[in-house]
Every structure is written in C-alpha cells, then in structure tokens.
Amino acid sequence: MNTNNTYRDIEGLITRHLSGEILMAEQEALDLWLLEKQENRKAFEEYEKIWRKTKDAKPVEKVDVNAAWQRFENAITNREVKEIPTGKVIGLFSRKVSRIAAVIVLLIATGLSFYLYNRLSNPEIHLATTATEIKVIELPDGTKVTLNGNSTFDYRKKLGKQKRKVHLEGEAYFEVARDETRPFIIETNETSVTVLGTKFNVNSHYKNKSVEVVVNSGKVAFETRKGNHQVVLEKGERGEYFKKGKTIAKSANNDPNFLAWKTKELIFENRTLADIVSTLNNVYHINIQIENKELELCRMTASFNNQPLDEVLEVIGLALDIEIKETNQGLVLSGEGC
Image (cartoon, rainbow, N blue to C red; front, side, top):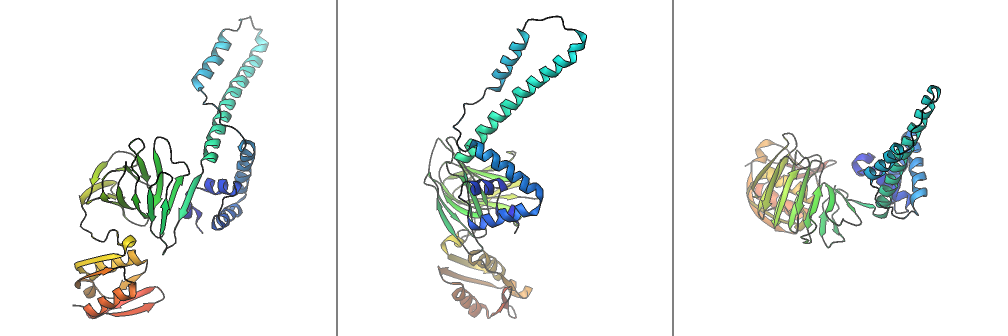
C-alpha cells in the first residue's frame, strides 16, 4: 500500500492512533510505515512522548515573541556594567549564549505546545472512497458533500472561525451552506475554489491532466494555489486548470453529463461512441474499451434515467450493432463500424 496516496500525512494517522480514533485500514497503513525503517519508529516514539506531555494541557496564551525578546534585552542593558577581567570574558560570553538559547528554547516549546494543543483538540477527519463507492458527507456547518469513487476528502472537526477550509483529491459535488462571514475553500494539490454558498462540481483526480470546476448555481472563484491566476465562474460555466501549462481557462459548460456520476441521468445527443464510453467509465466505474478506431466514430442519440449499466449497453449494442465481450480487464466493444 502506498500510504502517501491513501493518506495525506502520516501525522494524521499517528494522532488518530494515539487518540483511539484510528480505523482498521488506517492502523494497517501505520503499521506498515513503522516497519519500513528504524527512523520511522523513532519519529513515532518522539511524537508519542509529546502527546503524553500535552494531552492534558490547557490552551496557553499566545506568546508575544517581540515583547519577550525586548524584556530580555532590557534586562541585559540595565544590568550594572563592571570591569571584566580578560580571563573571564569567554566564560561570561558562554553564559550569555546559554541564556539566549534558553529563551529561544522556551519560546519554541511554548509555541509547539500551543500548536499541538490546537491540532489535537481539533483533529483532521480523513474520508476515502473505493473505486465503486459514493459517500454523502454533511459537514458541521450544514454543507453537503457527495464524494465520487477513488477520492479522498479531509477537513477539520471544527471548520474554522474565519475560513471553512477542506482538501479534496478526486471528484466531489458540493452544496455549500451560505455564510457571508466565513468563505468556504476547497483546496486541491495545485488549485483552490472559494465560495460563500453555492452548488458546483470539482474533479481533481491526480491522474487527470487538468482540474475541472463546473458551477450548477451561484458563483465561485477558481484560482491557482499560488494566487497568480484566477477566474470567476457563474452558473453554467466551467473552469479548467491545465497542470502542464499552469493556466486556467473559462468556458460555457456544454456537457450535460457532468453530474451523471451522482444522478445516473445520461443524455447523449449525436455523441460519438468514444465520448459515450468515456462517460460510462466515469459514471459506472468500469473499464470499457473500443476494439477499433472506426467504431469510435459511430454516433448515436439516447437518454437514460438511473438505469443499470447492462441495460444501457444493451441499447447501445442494438443501436450500433456492437458485440460486447467481457474480459479480465473489463469490457470490450467490437463491430465493423458505421
């Protein structure tokens, strides 16, 4: 198992293990990681020590680093200056360095304690789907997320007081609860989508050459994570981020089946068999191949409403005089063409 593809960071697995909230599959992934090398085991033990020391801690007040450092400098400046024998200069310098180091260590330790407390009191929730699975998730703010197959979704138990930020790898349909004071932000590896309240689809599968956003209602801002390119999309519009060129294009959405994976409603108007098969592979999570190029260009018009795949293929087979063969890899469509 490649834990980097299945879980966004190993720290989340360790946290869920120590808090007793880890799932069986996650525990297996963590065990494999611990067995990979001795350094992993040492890192786990260090994290465990910090956990034990901080799990019962109360939130600490935010440390004003500048003020602490100023007090430290004032203490040194206001100290009575005396003539120092040459032989003692090195020793005094060493003691000053030690004091400075102690202050820095104290600040780091306090900041780390505050950071760990926030992480542990507001854990990250990780959800994943199998190839044929669809999950419906309701977030604490009332937002509804429908997660397509082969996808992962991460969010904090408390979404945030100023921003509601989540992370998606794969495809999902969002129905975001409106909140004018807290923008909802979906982050992918290279892009982000920011909204206040709307309905839209995001497809960010890592194998794809692009990230696609299609807006069903409302308005969204689609941009690169670096913030150097942004487009605003409204109902009926589609944005596409091209990973190779690092650019975003905006256009009208001419695909009536962009939500077919969720609704199972299919509309094909004079579409080529190649286009139809591509849609069926995404909607039914199957591998359908076309045997020859001539067959790919055959066109047909048909619509289907939540019908099983075998019924859809039967109609296509009769319409285009196609033979359907089952193999170990999936299905193969063959015929003489149109």
